[in-house]
Image (spheres, rainbow, N blue to C red):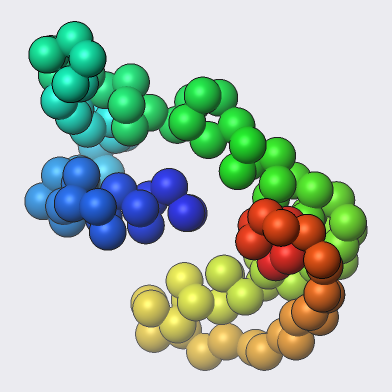
Length: 109
C-alpha cells in the first residue's frame, strides 16, 4: 500500500493509468527516465528487492511481533471498508496499538 500511495503522491501514476475494466491483465509498472542511462525504464519504480526490500522486511517484523490476531483485525477492517464502499452494512473491530522504539516507522505500526 505504501508503494501505491508513493506512486500517486510522486506523480508517477495517475488514476487514468489504472485499468478499471478488470480485464484480468496485470498492471504494468510505470516507466521513469533513468538519468544514468538516458533511457525510460520500469525498474526505477518496480516493486523489487532493491526498491522495497528494506521496507517490506520492516513491515514483516511488525506483523510478526503483533501476531495473527492483529493481522486478522486489519483484514476485518479492510473488509469493512470494502463493504462500506459498496453500500453494505459493516461491523466494527478495535485494533490494539503497540509502541516500539525502532527507528523505522514501519516497524512501529
